[in-house]
Every structure is written in structure tokens, then in C-alpha cells.
Image (cartoon, rainbow, N blue to C red; front, side):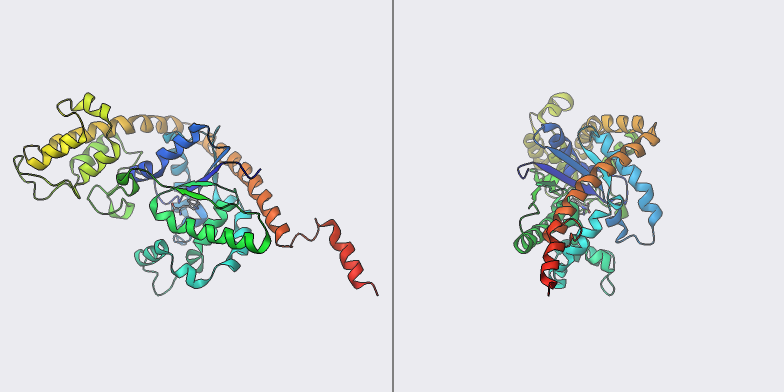
Length: 363
Ligand code: TRP
């Protein structure tokens, strides 16, 4: 106890997962799951959090729960090694959040940079739903309910982890050591930290239509790679080209490995040489895009193939999720019992309480 290494992470089911999710977190989760270094791995489909800004679209969330589950399995999340579960099915998480709310101030929530950006993006400025505003607290419940030590997520989740750690410290200070401070695990490759959309915009997002999905067909992937944003001033092959802000090269930073050059582009020993040639001039966008297309296909084909296999037995996926929810609930209930005890609201499990009160009221 106490020294266990536990992973908890998750995604909002608001769409199918894309390659930004993949390099930003999913790939790492699978490696961690298979590393044997963790005692438990919990992967949560955050449907309740998705509803905080999709109140009027429950059907979207419902449809995407299964999409995300399929994406997880396709990437290699293995239900024998990881517990995949659905947030809303764990009522204990709400109760924890309710208690944690007393440990956080409104102004602290207002300072959360990720929430700030999201408020702008959703035009919530004049009228923020309370549930949305407080989701960082709910996220602290998600993490602490499982006593997670490690949370592999994208960079945008950093403020949530900071908020969680503040809650843990405050709780433990007031009520005693019950909760565990988690550590964020970010991708180590800068290109993976925030993979841009195919249009070169800062982030891959469904609403911008600039995503390559894990479930895209080979044709869709190749078409998207071919139309990717490069250097707009690189008009002729002979022209010198820019690497910075050139999406194709950012993707190569994220996806290419030395063996890809041997296999698909043996004229170049490595990415640095390819970049140098592009910058000198004489290297056309199409050639680089073809190379990227080959790499993407190599990476995505097995994922796509596995997804199609899993899609053949949908009832089995729901069964797996239900089992995952049961396991997750048992763990969260254990933490909640400890929290209640520490907060002195465990009236009927405290064998001394009645005797104490009897003494107090004895005339
Ligand atoms: N906020 C995360 C996202 O938008 C989803 C999430 C909810 C999560 N609870 C979590 C991630 C707990 C890690 C840990 O993708």
C-alpha cells in the first residue's frame, strides 16, 4: 500500500480519436501498460465531463463512448492489463467532487488557463455553466479516486494536474494523509506535445476539420496527407523551403524513425538531411508527402485493421466496459470510504462514536 504505481487517464467522448491523441498520449499509454512497471492502469471515458459543455447533445456523447472504446482497443489498450471504464457509471466520483469543492476557491478556478481558453472557444464568457466551470475539481476526483501516481496526458491537461495536487495537499493537510499526489507524464517529443492540424493550425480539432482519425481509411489518410499545409512560398521544386511551421515536417518529427528512411527514402540517411535538402531547394513537397504518407500508412494500418476486427463484436465491447466499470467502482468506493472516515462523516462505521456521545450526554 502507498507504494503502488497506478495510472489513471482518459478522454472526453466527443468524437473519434485522431493522430493528435495518438502521439500525444495513446501510444505512450500502451507502452506504459505493457511496461510491467505499473500495478494498475485505469483508462476512463469521460462522458460526464463531455456533458459539461455538451448539455444539449447527449446523443453525441453516447455515440462516441463506443467510438473511443474501439479506438482504445485498436491502439492496443488491453482489457486484460488495463481497466477501461465510463466516468458517469462511478457515482463515487461525484461525491468526492462535492467534498473537494470546499477546498477550491472561485478565483482559483478562474485562473485555470485551459478552462479560460475553453470558455472563449465556447462563447461561455457571459454565462458559464457551473458544471463546466468546476470540471477541474471533478477531474481531481477522477484522478484521486484511483490514487493515481501517474497521469499520461497532453500538455493542455497540466493545469488540471496542478489543481489536483493542490486539492490533495489541502485535503491531506486538513484531514490526514489519504490522497495521493499524481505526476503528469507528457510526451518527450516536442512535435508530439501538440500536433498541429493538417491545415497547419495550432491544434487538431474536429470543428476545424483538420484531423486525421485513427479510423480513417487508407484512402482518406493519403488524401489528407496530400493536401497538407506546407510552406506557402515554396512554389517550385528548386525554391528553398521553410521547415518551421511546415506541417509535413512537424508530422515527420512526430512519426518518422530511422528505419523509415531505409525502407521508403534510402537516398537520405535521416530527417536532418531531408530537412537540409528542403531548405536548400530542389526537394518537392510531393516527394516529402509521399514519404510521410508511407509512414502514416505503416503506423495506422495495424490500428485500422484491429479496429475493424473489434467492430465485429460490439456487444463484447459493452460487456468489457461494464466489467471495467465494476472494477473501477470498487476502487473508487474504497477511496471514498477512507475520505469519509478522514472527514468524520462515517457515522455508522465508527464503533466508538455512539459510546462517546453517550458519555457526552450523560447527566
Ligand atoms: N480533461 C481530459 C480531456 O479533455 C479528460 C479527462 C477527464 C481526464 N478526467 C481525466 C484525463 C482524468 C486524465 C485524468 O481530454
